[in-house]
Image 1 (cartoon, one colour):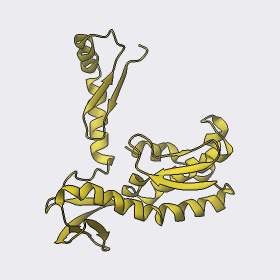
Image 2 (cartoon, rainbow, N blue to C red):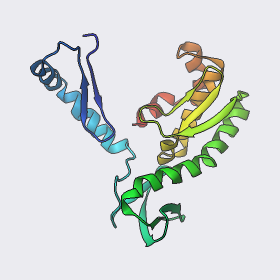
Image 3 (cartoon, rainbow, N blue to C red):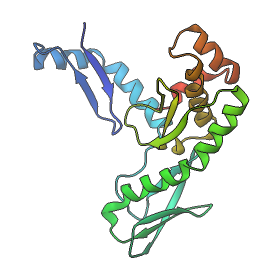
Image 4 (cartoon, one colour):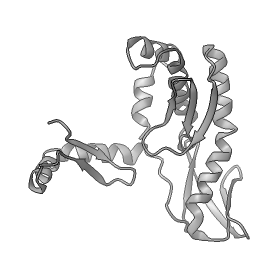
Length: 203
């Protein structure tokens, strides 16, 4: 049915978009009909998702480049999170601001790691973006604008390098092909033959 969509949100809850005349009873019946799909997707996400905690506690872990690291804490006058090689250090002024401090860490890291991977693949593919930007997207991993400005999601840094490289290759390929037709996927496959498998692991 047109305008009837089911999705799994980042927090694991189920969202449904329905036509405006759709009743609550019809919506619940549709969700019940998709129960097997919902269970399968939640199981898949539980295995592959790299979700960080929304608040800090002594058992917190942070995902970085595909590895989950423990977090230690020390008092500070300003919130900041730093990676120490085998753990993260949360310099805590206000524990409630833990997510914001983590986003700032990912942004700082993106300017080094994601920029380096983009430069590497740009040279290899002979495709050069007009500019490279970083931000936190909720529903996409990256984009390439009509004038070839590439923006990458800082949340990519939760995942292993091969998944990061796939997204970089994908967005660079859009410099040549502004679509997802056969020629685009052939270009992506030339540099990452297992792109179909990798794309499914980005949840």
